[in-house]
Image (cartoon, rainbow, N blue to C red):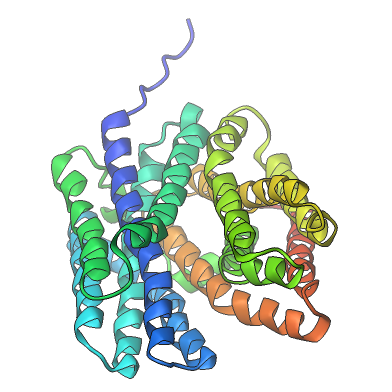
Length: 383
C-alpha cells in the first residue's frame, strides 16, 4: 500500500496568501504615490531616489530582528503589529507635509513590511505539503504579484491628491487583518517554538545561492519597475506603449508562477532554477533587438518578468525543502534583507549603466547579474 498524502490545507493557505496580497497592494500603491507627490512639490530626482531608498533600507535593518520577534511575541502578534504599524506610518506620511520627515517613516514602513513577509512566507512554506510545495508557493507568489499590480491600479481610481490615495492604501492594510483573524488556530506555530534559532548572519553561509537569487530577482524587479519605461521611451516608444510594456511585464510575473510551481513539483529544482536564471539573462540581452518591434518586445518582457520572478518562487520552494523551525524563519528574514538590498542597489546600478552606455545599459546590467547567478548555480556544490 502507498503512503497517503497529507491533504492540502487550502483554508489557511488562502488566508495567508490574502494577507500578503492585500499588504503588497498597499506597498505597490505607496511607491508611485509618494514619488508623484514629491515630484509635484518640486523635489529633485536625487531626493526622490533617496526618499524611496528608505523602504528597502528598512527591510535590510529588519533582518536581525524579525525571527527573534517571532520567537518572543509569536507570529500572529508580529503580523498584527506589522500591519498596524505600516498603516499608521502611511497615514502619518499623508498628514505630514515635510518630505524630510517622511524618511524615518518610510524606513519604518520597510521594517514592518519585512517583518510581515517573514511571518507570511514562513507560514506558507510550513503549510505547503511536500508533494504540492511548488504549486502552493506558486499560487502564493502569483497573488503577491497581483497585489503589487492592484496598488498602482487603485491610483487610477482615486487619484494622487488629498487623502483618498492614503486612505485606499490604509484600507488594503487593514483588510489584511480580516484573514489573519479569520483562521485562529489553523496557522502553524513550529517556527517560533522550541528552537534556539540561528542568526541571520550565520544563515548567509548555509544558503548563499538562494540569497543571491533573491537579491538578483529584487534587482531585476526594481530595475523593471523604475527604468524599463525610460528604456522604451529612449527607443522611441510613446508614453502609452511604454506603460503598456510595464503592464505586460507584470502580467508575466503573475502568469508564470503557477506553471513554474507545478514544474517544481515534478522536476529537479536545481535544473529549473538554472533554466530561469539563463532565461532571464537571455531575454534581457535580447531587449535592444526586440524593442524595434513592439509585439516582439511585449512577448519578450512577458517571458522576462515571468522568469526573474520565478527565481523568487523557486527560492521559497528550496528554502522549505532544506530548513524547518526557527531556521526557516531566519532564512525568510535573510530573504527579506536580500530583497531590500537588491531593491536598494538596482536602480542606481542600472541608471549608472544607462548614463554610461545609453539605454543598452539596462539589459547589460540585468543580463550580467543573471549570468553570474547561473554560473554560481553551476559551480556550487550545494544550492
